[in-house]
Figure: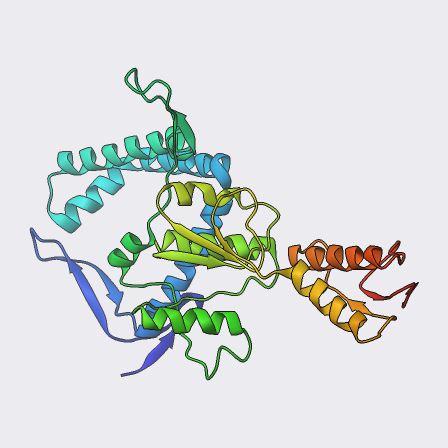
Length: 312
């Protein structure tokens, strides 16, 4: 069997199959049989196209749907003839199917934003003092059932604990409970954090443990309201009320400072993280409080300090 280079760089075999007119047995068209690589490349292009479609926004999608509707309407005769030849349906039935598709496209173009956007809905007279918000979120599990593709890749590494002790502890607890951990890195980037967390929400994880980066996590509120369990650690998730596991940053700094002072040290350095980060802020504040308690200045403190003078 030989192979040829097709469009988009696909490697296709010379194996083909025919589409027949069910009424006459006539060959309507001949198509190549896709290899496993062809299918993988096609799925990859489809995923890129889906992201492109999502990035168009409501206005861009409406414009293209209306253009598609116009194209189908213009060539409805040709399309009906094609459906008739491929399926054997009467032309009238084929035209009706295409007409219904045109109506659905028109409806989607005009109403998708109104139907799918987050919106408040009336609760009715019985519960007039209540309010509700509806929003459509795609269910990745349903998509996976249809496509047979999960969109995830497993990676088994030697030792997670060496690089992230907390994640290692989480995995140990999960294994003891018969659960599996899916971990993603946010790289201290707010957009990457939101992308990772919402990907987990769409896959309907049983729960999400997050090391918060973003300044506001209100985007998680609809997921929490729908039953998603979220736990934050190391720093709180702002804008939402979730269970949170924190270390005693201030207490730790105070204890370390007191220990050094009690052993006769007076020039005590402080190396700290960016104070925009919760843990960095808490530790820096605690160190300033320790300095003030000793009657020492703390004006201009930035990352690396000694008692009584700044070490640049």
